[in-house]
Amino acid sequence: MTMTETTLRKLSGDEVAIYREQGYVIVPDVFPLEELAEIDREIDRLQETQKKTGRNKGWIMQLGLRSEVTRQFVQDERVLTLIEDIVKPGISIYSAKLTAKVPHSNDICHWHQDDAYYNTRVLSKTRMSTWIPLQDADETNGCLWVVPQSHKGGVVTHGPFGGQCPKCMGPADLMFDDAIPCPVKAGDILLFHACLWHHSKGNQTDHVRRAFIVSYQEATVPRGNADQYKILRSA
Image (cartoon, rainbow, N blue to C red; front, side):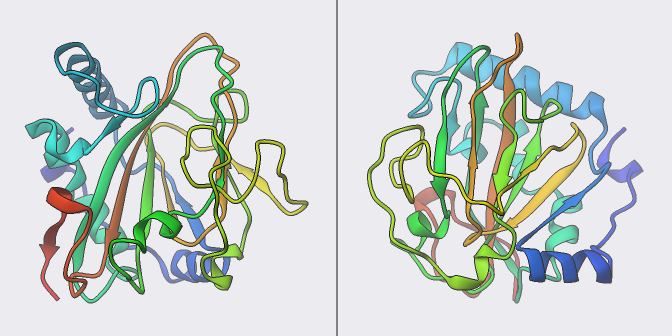
């Protein structure tokens, strides 16, 4: 299935309301599995042919600049149409990366907020991320955990606590009573606010867990993460 054969759809009013209230929303059945398999093969090729591409095993930073396949994916009209009512006026890309949990690893991404990193470069009022699993993601292989409504308080203090993320809200054993897992199927997409508290645990399975993550912001923001910045829809 190609994009031209797929109907572009916007978030429903209920989905927008959930995103604004909870800080995230899961949208089912956005991508066909055969398309994700093609992306997965491209990730394999990039990791085989390019030098070290990320700070953690299996990760690829600046993913939208790595190949034509990944460039097209970060600019996909299906995603832009989905987020156009929450990222505005216009849409620009801040950054893109591939995060991975290799089999039988305890690679923990500590609790953090994306804007703790992003605000050091440029402020945004509507910045958010799309979390696109290339394989089904659940509690056994490292799905995201979130604290609903935590995006409403702005960015809190972060420090160097180790783990997969250089800046975090606390050590590996930090947990919140109202934290919940966000299992998502391959083909679904998790949208979340750049101030939402989130983290992920290790991978207990025999297979890699990969997620294609793209962060977007309004087109009126003058810059992003260096060469990754690009206006995709004008304000």
